[in-house]
Image (cartoon, rainbow, N blue to C red):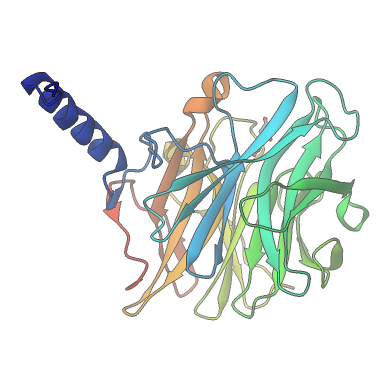
Amino acid sequence: MRKVFTPITFLLLVGIFFTNGAMCQKQSIIHPGELWPDNNGNHIQAHGGGIIKFGKTYYWYGECRRQGLDTAYRYVSCYSSKDLVNWTSRGDVVKMHDPENLGRRWILERPKVYYNEPTKKFVMYFHEDNAGYKVARVGIAVSDKPDGNFTFVKSFRPLGHESRDIGQFIDDDGTAYLIFEDRPYGFRIAKLSADYMSLEKEMCLIPQHMEGGALVHYHGLYYAIGSSLTGWSPNPNKYATAKSLEGPWSEFQDIAPPATKTYGSQSTMLIKVTGTKGTSVIFMGDIWKPRTQWDSRYLWMPLKIGDGKLWLPEPQPFTLNVKTG
Ligand code: DGJ
């Protein structure tokens, strides 16, 4: 019989074992601003994203800006996780070709997915626009499964208003809302219809020019966060509070030392993690790199929040335990 298990094959096997091991090693720490590898060791591509929990699994959707994509299409990627730290790539759940003839440089940004219990559909909202950001609509795509594929259904201006950056908010009672920027008025919060395929009613217009709108309901108070309109460049993000979504909303205040420009990031979502020992609210921000979008990073950091105050501490690595909160 031929001898196949030579010392060289043994060394090769050990090498493969360790390389794979390093790639799939479980992470326990979130490093704000650093490369964030998925289960394949690739930097997560979920920019301007949103997260939903379906059963015991979190799904993170966002703009896929991977290098080498076909420029005729726009892509949304999806990742799943049980702990918000280790993310498994579920692939590109959207690969869409200009559905409404908006031109070669059409825009699909800030995808947000909701699960609609009555129809059992996953409903994706996204910012749909032309290259000049003049169309200002939301697009809707649906899927039967969380990890796609999502099929384009329609686009519209929510409640007749312009809509650029969108944010998603699901309240503690399960009611789903869309946050959208309506220039030049401010940003609006609107309740989704029963099947999530349209908007039912406006809750409020916050007369502040803000993008990257995000909301959290914490200890009886709503906290709204947003950034100023400075394109891809960071600026000091601000927050306001209200006892009800209808307002009245407080004055806006800085969430971090203004000189840091939100530590170089822009808000996209606030995630509330309630566990056995407490509740954390995580600021989810994008550190955009407009010329090398694939390398844009994520700034996640637990907020100091309570009694009407909110503060984003200086980013540093942190552990997150979704069981204890
Ligand atoms: C700021 C927005 O928040 C981003 O989503 C993107 O639309 C850029 N503007 C484009 O300049």
